[in-house]
Length: 185
Image (cartoon, rainbow, N blue to C red; front, side, top):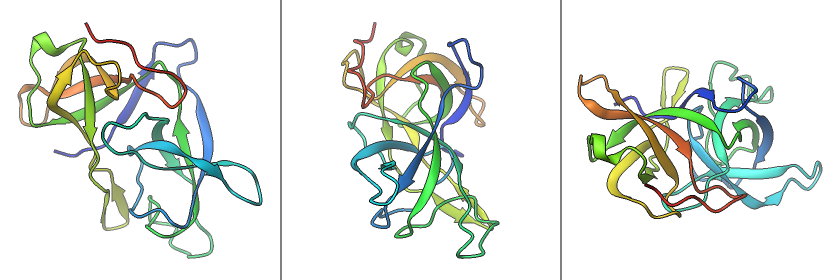
């Protein structure tokens, strides 16, 4: 499984969704990559006042998905597409509440009857391969339910790289840091 949440569009009128700039505190513990799910930390950068985010954990409300990492010119590592642990930085996050993402399924596959249910993520830290930071976050088929506090809503089953329907899914954020989720159907 490749992992990561890939933005594929939105049900809103703007096809690009809504990108917002967030800072990441020097104290973040793991590498962040495009496709990682994040949530606001409740603090902001002292100098700019911009909100900070960090990797989300399972069962937490979600702010959005990283769609870009602003390069750090101080390290001259301009080929690294992620943000290493314990280094302050800036990320661009897709915060559109109607955004749709493709993601691999762990502990699955999901079945046709699971479309409309809510699920959490498997929050695995990203890894570095060459100069590419790779997101390893996936959807967790274990615990799927109608519960409104689960992080994502299953919108559609997809066929994964293993050729199995339901080993990859199309999802929408359900439980955000700005609103309580909707009960699954």
